[in-house]
Length: 585
Ligand code: ADP
Image: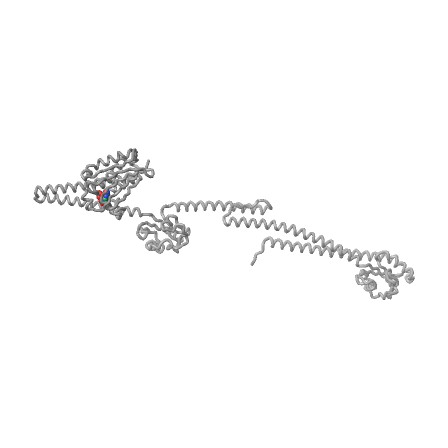
């Protein structure tokens, strides 16, 4: 059903009341005035008739002349006078010739007079052809009825007066109605505007717009209602801003969390998800909330875990590989969520990135296996030769040969242990190393001095192209260790009589130290792993050269400590170029 507006309802009620009250009053007034006018005229007619009867020459009733004179006296006034005898014959009339008039015995007013109940009669006059008011009294002389004295007046005049009164009252009523309607209209409009503004402001509050308020002026009740609504708005605004602040705090906390967090409802629908989780599942800038959990990933292990948590209603923990190549490992904690009435809402998944942990664990295992392997070979060899020397008779020649082999393997063991100790030392916090600025020529001359004997043995020439006054910002001993490792590798893996070139240049606000050799080079497929611990291209050759497989990983670590890097460019049988970049101060 269509509901009417407050304006229409109130205004139509007021309109009906106004029309009814003023209309009824007008009708009542018009009727009362009409009756009053007629009553006055009737009373005057009765009074006039009685006075005329007193003045009537009763003894001369049959003297037509005298009677005519009497009736004509009324011509000047508006009253018509008629004298009628007992038989109804008109003796004289102030307006009409009596002889032309018909018998009046059965006229209503005459009949009333005969019965002694004279009343004013309103009726149409056939003689004058108009509505007239009649009153008649019997003419008596010495208790004997002689006829009737009848007076009458025209009703036209009265009707005109009545018309004037009616028109006047009608006009006054219309003016009153218009005035009342106008006042009602204004008041209703004002009231409806007030109600509408209350409705509008309440509507604004309902949608969270609180920058509107109501004027607190006007009638007491309206002002108090407006005040209450304004107070309600302020209260709601405060409450909502508190809730919004709390929500934002919670949201920013969730968003700033490094750990991916997902809230899933009982129907496997994502209710909430933070940015880390969206990034993890590669769904950044996509609308994930409201979607099934399968929208995030089709990783079956993950989906099975979620299903298990929801089906078994249990908080669980599991490490899950989260990409096809099992590159990322996450430890997922699930917790069951309940509302205040202890109804289950769903589950919360908090995921910890264990990728680095898993990688380090793998590296640690590989490292231990590598170390064991690297140490076992020389240790087994040393043990084997010593047992042979103890339990067998060996010639002096063989003894010397075995001792040389034992010496070589023990040197190797020593080198491995030295390099391992060196690497362990470099694992310390980066900030514990003190850097200084010094000429790079100092670094290069000390490193070349260390390898000069080996270089000379292999008839390798080391040439320099060092920028004048080039300064380096580094830890002198570590930088020397890195450069020495590169130089000794170049000597190890280069043919006799070749050349090693050392050059420096300023680049990107730092200093680049380059070591170029003409050695065997490193195949492209091995270049990526060359800086890993114990990685060697040709294991046998490295061992023969007394290599430990740790030299380049020490270089890499030293450059990390400096905030720089070590890179390689190499071609098989052409040679290799190792570059060390030391950032500026
Ligand atoms: P190693 O002690 O075996 O030399 P490194 O870590 O220093 O261990 O080097 C790793 C491997 O890289 C070496 O075994 C070798 O195969 C290769 N390599 C390093 N430097 C060179 C170079 N200048 N020329 C050719 N191969 C090299």
